Length: 480
Image (cartoon, rainbow, N blue to C red):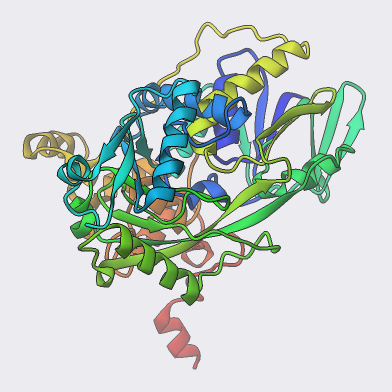
């Protein structure tokens, strides 16, 4: 029997696992997909929000501000890129200015540092490519950007390196109360634990209902994005938001930590929790509003587009509670959930302590995780030293992103180990360039097959039935 089961391997589940791994506990993370960070975590705006948007006194506000302040040190410990680029909420008229002034008051009350309202001239000096129609902006210098799925991979990897276990392809179908805890089932498979933490994102209401808690519901909100080539990354330095509405923060334009430019998201409430389709209407909205915000965007430089689903809870706030003894919900964690994630983990730690779980620190806990080799960013001298130690780093596999065979093998051999092409992509950026894996994909399949000792044909794009190869070309031709 485990001490703690965490259902869901997104950024919240990952941060909770990492926080609890410092204690002498037997921890297991359950994930329904083939890899970690497969839900809302892999498709969001990648923003570390300063904390002025959420209503004062709410869990969103409190945990956003605390989590934002923690994020830089967390990323440093986990070897994950973090960039404190600051954010701007731009306005175009008197109504926008009133909203911006209200956001500043809210942020000041909550303790968000150094907020300022900028007038047009100062704003355009700071960001010359903004629309000339802007009149003012709220400037939040503590705003930042991070890669959400790399943060999650690193957090779960760090937890696993400290003894936590991960079970993928385990969709929870039932939870049964047993003596001393819970039995969590996935079809015929089951695991038991003294405590269960529900970090199941869009499906957290379904998981809560399995223990008799039907006090909330969660629905999906579609958010579509367009990602521009790194050639466009220098248009802006700051993350640029429109003034927010009840549906969210509108279409943003933001650099990414890897140098691309991200546009989006749309915000449409839907019913299907598995519907991640993109739409022509969504892209039209993104393009129209992004061009209203920023001059010089070249949509022809789009390298990919995608859709994420936000888990919108029925309460209007994060739902972090314990409706049943030894069962904790972390539900309805929409924006600013990524920003708040380190603080959410600490909040859940305090709930466990209050519930009677003994938290004795390990003497051998290791809070740090070395960063992956980033061959592209190394100097010539550093590259030569790396290749001297391992010749695999001298072979470029992904030409678009300059990712080496050594980096791919490093990712495949490191916790949590990727089992499919998309898993390698999220860890290394191989396949994320202009060709989107057209050149490097087949060789990465070969590496995955060899490292996992499985047939070439068994490697998938993203788990399940997403097979890439049906057989060898010459053998197929011979059979014909």
